[in-house]
Amino acid sequence: MTDSYKPFEGRVAIVTGGSRGIGRAIAELLAARGADLAIADVRLDGAHATAEEIAAQSGRRVIAVEVNVANFEMTQTMAKTVVDEFGKVDILVNNAGITRDDLLMRMKESDWDDVININLKGAWNCSKAVIRDMMKKRYGRIVNISSVSGQAGQAGQTNYSASKAGLIGFTKALAREVAARGINVNAVAPGFIPTVLTDDLPEDLKTSILAATPMGRMGTPAEIAYAVAFLASDEAAYITGQILGVDGGMVMM
Ligand code: NAP
Image 1 (tube, rainbow, N blue to C red):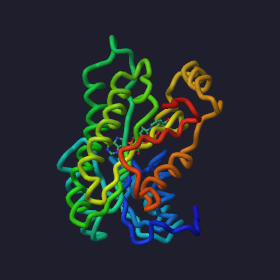
Image 2 (image 1 turned 45 degrees about the horizontal axis):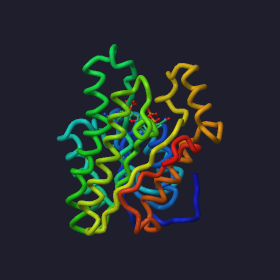
Image 3 (image 1 turned 180 degrees about the horizontal axis):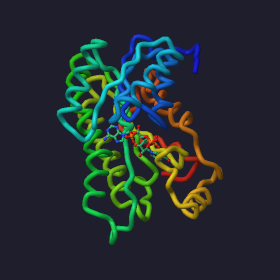
């Protein structure tokens, strides 16, 4: 991807779960628009491959960092690695996420714990790991990837919906804490975007999700990336604590 518009020149970003899917699209766009960045993912081989490809496409410095966002110590090490490499962190995109769907009556305790720990605690861990650096230089952009499931609830996803609704509260609370320090915290709530994450959804559920989408189509990872890039840019300087739906009209607040 190439882009003549370079709002992120001189900026450093971390994209968690950036090896593939929506995270990869976000990383590609930020790099195309001038950011140096870290692809922070749980599998280093995947992160390396993506980092190399994005560096080649964009001409930016792109590194791969191994992190399980649910692990507090690993997120601290991730932030230190990025600051050692690039000198700072300007933009954090909390994108890493998983699903472990089942009806509550069948869902295992570990399915609840894994989803909450990765999707919700992961964003807390990563934000905590970078916030001191952002506060010191009085600049930062944090964008959390929530979901329509967190806004509206989705049967079979009590764990996932709770984690994504939790991210909305987290976004607003942190936005209030750090607004006066030049740090903006917002969330994007995607609708149905075909990725590995949604591959396993039953066909009847996909059909009913599409029927509930006024635009009648799925979104693309790039369409999520454009919203994230806006919120991560200086054009969004007066926007904080907001949840931007990118969902074909599925949820209208
Ligand atoms: P995806 O294709 O499964 O990509 C998720 C990435 O996160 C993968 O690279 C995955 O690594 C990584 N990851 C998983 N657990 C991790 C951990 N503990 N620490 C670090 N990285 C981890 O999913 P996606 O569809 O792009 O989703 C990206 C985000 O968008 C998620 O937060 C998701 O909830 C959200 N979202 C997606 C949709 C949708 O329709 N796709 C809709 C709303 C919201 P592995 O290779 O190990 O899996």
